[in-house]
Each structure stands twice: as structure tokens, then as C-alpha cells.
Amino acid sequence: MSARDAILQRLRTGHACDPAAVIAAHARGPQPQPYSIQVEYFAECARSLASTVANTANLAAVPQEIARYLDENGLARRLVCWAEHRELDWGGAGIAAESRSATADDLVGVTGAFAAIAETGTLVMASGEATPPATSLLPETHIAVLPASRIVGTMEDAFALLRAEKNPWPRAVNLISGPSRTADIEQTVTLGAHGPYRVHVIIVGA
Image (cartoon, rainbow, N blue to C red; front, top):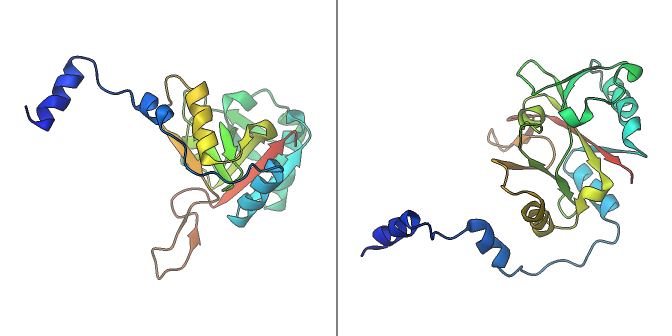
């Protein structure tokens, strides 16, 4: 029996390896020392990647922080957001907000985040019906509302969290490390080439 035939036979009989089980059983490689100040380290790394970072004491303060950010950047107070933020007091902050997936005409998208990685300043986004990726990918400005409790130390920690909390896994897991960028043209870094050219992270409860 050829290798191809052996693989097909395993698929037919339902004994194919479970990728999640294989990953979970794999020994983790060397890790850095735990970060004693994960929130601060995440913010520092995120800023080094051209993101901006702000803090709020609680979720109720998020609309006012977003209003401040939009005004500071000369942006209209209009946005789309994930369903989890639908009930925030947008009107009280003078913001017109719609809870839906973004389209090409939307300029500002507000999302949550499954987690964030302190080591790299990266947002971890898990797709789903209530967490459409388009809201973080299509608008020119992406604003992520991130609970401080969801910041982990390393990428390995983030994927361990995904394995523990997501069953089945989402169709897509997107890692966002600052605004979209490319250096394809004359080796000059250009922001916003394939997605948002602004990323603003609001850390809640830090």
C-alpha cells in the first residue's frame, strides 16, 4: 500500500489524527520568563508597531474614549461595532453606532479581541457569527476593546487559551500586530496597504 493509499484508508475508517490533539500533546519549546507587568509590556510593544493605546477603568467609559480618539484624528463620530458593544451608551458620547459587519464604505470599526499577546503587542481575533473579521479588516480605522484580563504572555499561551475555550475552533484566527503595512514598493514601508492604517487599542480595567 502506498503512502497515499494509507492516508486515504485512515480517513475512510475515521482514524485520522486529530490536529488539535496532536498540537496539545506537543511539548512547548523554550519560553521567556513570565512578564510581571503584562499589560504595560503589551502596550509598549503595540506602540512600537504603530498602534495607539489608551486605558479605561471600565467598559462604560469606552464610548467617551472613542469620541476623544475620533476627534483627535479628525474622524467623523460614526462607526460599526460587534454585537457585544451594541448596548454601550454611544448616543451619550455623540457617536452614531451600528452593530453589524463592516462593508467597504465603513471608515471606523470597533471590535473586541479574543486575547492579546504581551510579548509581541499582538491582538488575537477569533472569527464567529458575532465576531465578524470584516469589522477589523475593512475600515480604515480599527478600534479594539481589550479587557486587561485577556492579555497573555506569549503566543503559546494564546493558542493554549484557544484550545481551552474554543470547541470547535473558529474558521479563522487572525493575529493583528499594528496597522496593515507593506514594503513591496522600493522597500518603503507604507501603512494601510491591505487593511486598516490606524489601530487603536483600548485596554479596559488595567
